[in-house]
Image (cartoon, rainbow, N blue to C red):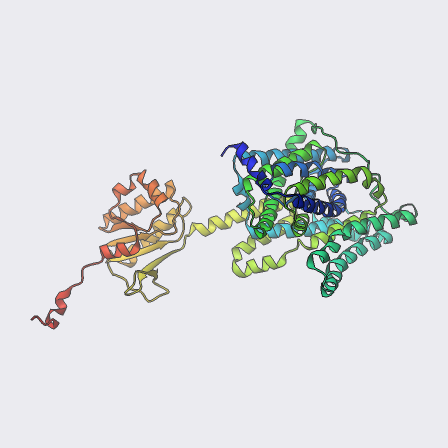
Length: 581
């Protein structure tokens, strides 16, 4: 399929699209913008950028995604994860270079994603294990919550690592501003009250779930407006030095290529690549989860193009890296969004808000935005997932815990790297010693099972070794050692069958080991046979000379192998009992 055809597939939703669907999408876009207005300001604060940068991240990227993405409900724009990764990357630069640095990050992330999309690199979405991603998000959420304490209590908290931030918070806690604390903690408490007790009360009053959730969805905007009015009326900024958002220009983002020295670009390349991967994995995970509920399909390859286009648009409009938002996408799903037009219309509404509403929010306390961020991060904490993983697989859990502590102790950028490296180490460690068992036959059947677990029929001269792993350079030597142990264990063995139902690949190193095993057995007058090997693996073996050297045969099934190799029954011992007439 050509690149053009892949893009045209994104517009299949136009088939059967009705006027009523357009009305529903417009309502969804309106509700979405109510949530997007406070989030764009809050996440800009989290990224260490001016509020107008967050607004820009909610406009052009959403428009670009609506043309290139494959999800009908995914809301692409500013999110907590890319915000915390952005501030970690740009904090090394002087403040006057941070806006352009954020735009450079977005542009490079978009280019990386677009290249991967053209190369059909959507499989990267499965590269990170679920426990690692869950632990990474949990660690990042903790880091975000701690980082926002400086705005809730209005104290100086230098540092990017959690230990540095907590130490500076403890040292400066005496300088906190009480009114900021009231705004920040009050925001968290009110959001909890609206989304928990009030929601439950509305449900008990037989108000539909969908309508009851609307209250929670628009509550952040109501809080922002109320806090701004309250702060302006009582002049808290002038009287108590309460930190506020400040002037927000009533302008739309300009299109401009981020210009900087090459050394500046080089410094940000690794961060841009990490942000691209994390944002893409997060977006695909959200998109696929919601699409499955409506029996739609999200194509990871197309999502690379969609999120890539969104980030390039962000870079060209002075914004910062964007990704799919879980809360906003879930809102789209709940409000019945039918098409990507929701994102496009929400972006246009945000553009209108940028010219009219946003400038009125200059007296909004930063503590309120910090409270919004902290409350949204509570839903990202997933310690239950780590515990479930620990109960099921200690290796996976240790990998996840390693990623979690890497985020907390080293920073968010290193969490992904540590989690990925640990995953690879544990995977290689597990496959270094592939699971192998000796199998026998259930008497009177064609079923073969583990001889150590079940009462099965075995033959002294025929032994079967089942291999439950693909064979490659890291475990090839282990197979040689296992066969050597069988030779010593069964001196009467004349035939060895390698049962390979789980072997999906045999690389060149493993092929050399099989050749060596075959020769070693041949010297001992033992035949080597293979059973239940996959056709695509056989195709590769045919391209080598291994099958020509094989002393035994290749059997379609294990039962066929045993029937062909087992000795004929000796009926002579029963001849005295046979009555001949």
